Length: 315
Image (cartoon, rainbow, N blue to C red; front, side):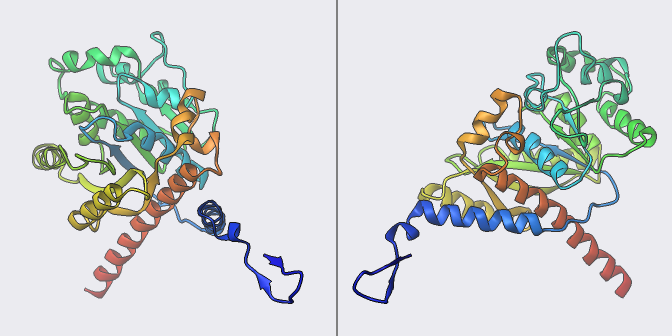
């Protein structure tokens, strides 16, 4: 605001209404809302597998940043890195050299998960079961194993029954393919979270993924369901991103989060520093969006279960 020299009338500074000013004001308001938000943790461990058979959709980025955002609101989180590339382990600054005990040892040699879990330097609440390059051969080695589809599930059940402080969330980062590693993740999980990028071909392969989820439900894990769809790489300046978001919401109204993850340089830069965007630049647009998504995931779950309990009580 500025005062005219010849008048008592207050004039608006044009810069106050610039796109950058509006964006900064919006981010400030969202930060305040997050700071004042109260969340109630579920009281049971939610096991969520983050999956999309289409590569480059922000799957690992979503897994680690959601995990960090959940830890940021006080949740205990275990990230299971089931991708042989080990990108989730890298982003959480978890050592995962060839000699590191890893998920491979859990799946093939039946190591307890407690023997391989490491704590991320970002937070005492954020832990990781790392991947190593050995996991690349696990697909072949699992073929001859007894109960090959259930090995991760059995290991997680044993871990949750013995660990002193149970995690509120287990986030499983899958490889971008449907092999025995992904099937193990689906069999072990309660929920599937699907990141979808707001770009052309966004829904490509999604019907196949949903078909695979139905197959797992029928034969291996009846409790599995797609609970969450998160729109990523959103650029509100383009009509295409808006159209993709509208199309996804029209098909999956109940699963799609209100929160969208914008295209963000900070989100892209963070892994090269061995950090999530929450630690790298917690005030950036990408970090705020992932924090909002974490709060929404908790609140939606609580609202759904509160409604179910009310319906059961009414019955």
